[in-house]
Image 1 (cartoon, helix red, strand yellow):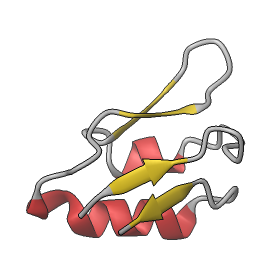
Image 2 (cartoon, rainbow, N blue to C red; image 1 turned 60 degrees about the vertical axis):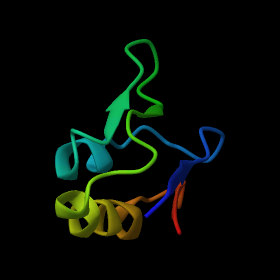
Image 3 (cartoon, rainbow, N blue to C red; image 1 turned 135 degrees about the horizontal axis):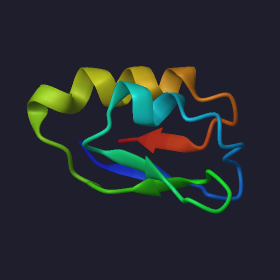
Image 4 (cartoon, one colour; image 1 turned 120 degrees about the vertical axis):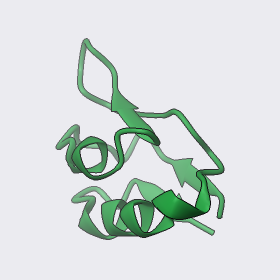
Length: 63
């Protein structure tokens, strides 16, 4: 699995951080997503897929 985030589409809702804190974080100043792990471990795949599905800005792409 490979994860890409589009910070321009991120609205700072933070759902990704709640679902997969090992993979995503947010900038302190504006809450925009930060990708911590572009290739997460297999045990995180389900959480990352859920985070991508729940993202209101559709800012997370999983391949």
